[in-house]
Image (cartoon, rainbow, N blue to C red; front, side, top):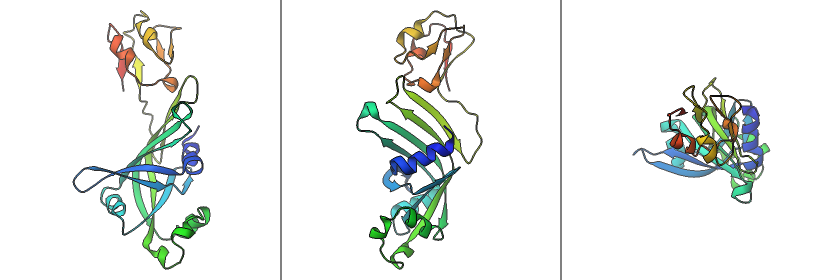
Length: 206
């Protein structure tokens, strides 16, 4: 999927996410917020200017969150995002209320809605993790920035093809067709077994 598909999934299929920010003492704080809209390269949410969350977002201009969907662990999809935020103000409030009409029950009058402001996550990276697939499915994505960064475990040219990594891989995601072997990162759990058992140090973690 493209980044815009992951962002749309967060808004339409999950909606409420647990966000982490950092307070004035450098300590992490979490809050539940609703992701109310998305476009091809950003997410939008709102908060009241009287909340501590507003202060943390204004001071740090950065957040991270994890969103999950599924009845249990083995049916669960998790999407994690970390990125930069900027305040857009009130202008987008009417549009977000029309798309999320339950908000009229929380802030029923135009006067009460003056307390609100919109934030945009305009630049970030994310990870998709789907345990409902066999083998599991993992993907990295970015939005608002261009990055070719690949994260995970990789087998270098030092590989001798001994097969020890294959024996300990819980998802059977190491391709042995050629030497060096290749880890199929889209199915990798990132457990680190391959790195631990490699006798020649041919596995790197990026």
